[in-house]
Image (cartoon, rainbow, N blue to C red; front, side, top):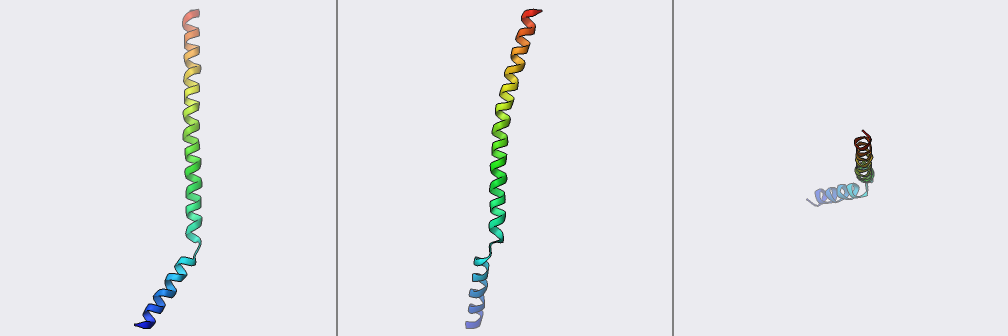
Amino acid sequence: MNTMLLKLYVKFQDLMSREEGQDLVEYALVVALIAFGAITGMGYLAKGLNNAFATISTTLATNL
């Protein structure tokens, strides 16, 4: 029983000292940040395009 607890403790310490999972979390955070920036940028771009087309539409309607 004592050796099984010792092996379990050693295995737990080995799992705690690994750093592979940290890389995955860091990449996920970077992807989330890029996605957030893209969504925000697309919102501003859509608003600007909408204003541009509204201005063109108004100009064409008044000149025709």
